Image (cartoon, rainbow, N blue to C red; front, side, top):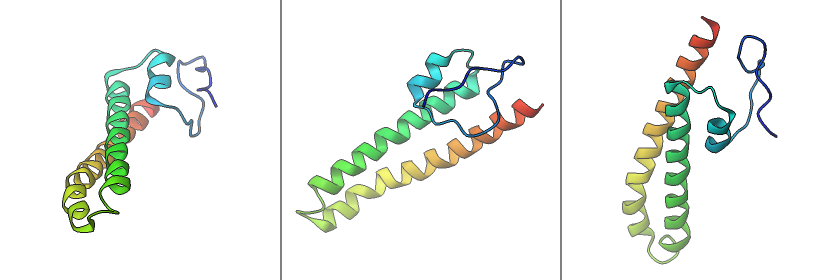
Length: 97
C-alpha cells in the first residue's frame, strides 16, 4: 500500500503507514530525522539478511559457530531497534509540536 498524500499542513494522516525506506525517500519533504530513520531501517534490514544467511548456511552445519557468528548481528540489530524507537519518538513529538 503506498504512502498516502500529505494533508494541508504537510503531514501524513494519522495512523500507521507501511513503507520501505525507498518509498519514504521518494515521498519527498524528508527532514534529517526522517532520513536517519529510513537509513536505520535499511541497516536493520541488511542485518536481518545477514542473520538469515547465517541461519540457513552456518546453523545446519555448525550450531556452535552459528551462535558465535550471530552474536554480532543480533547485538547490532538490538542497537538499531533502539535507535528506530528513539527516532520515531522524535518524529512523533515534532509532528505534534
